[in-house]
Amino acid sequence: MESTTEKNIATFTHLSSLTQYFIPFGNYIFPIILWSTKKEESEFVNHNGKQVLNFQLSLLLYSLVLLMIAIPSFLISIFKDMSLNALMNNHDFEFSNFNFEANIGFLTVGIVCLTIFGLLKIAEFFLIIYAAIKTSNGENFSYPITIPFIK
Image (cartoon, rainbow, N blue to C red; front, side, top):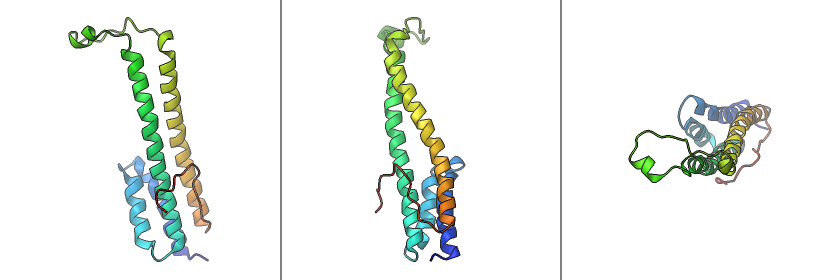
């Protein structure tokens, strides 16, 4: 049976990943601080701290992959029909040669990647809240689609 202190620390470990909306990299810094202070004393805090960090690292990896696909897709579709002289000599970008139909594949890939990225961020917010509720009730929580970087 977990004590109230252990439940609170584990809950705040989950909730501390929401600091990413106010402090850059807060979703890594604060969970690491909370987890590392009590991981040796409580298996419950240790389990939940690992879950939070693994989930945040997994989302970072997924986000980087999606952005590495989306950004080149948009850049290729924009600059595909533009001549090199127009890019080098003229400082005004003119997209008169842009053909939407010829670039629909790249644009679709980019839009799908950005949509998945947005859905991941929405799911992340609600999963963090759900995990905090489960943890405050004393249940171990494991995030879905998480790669176990820290075992």
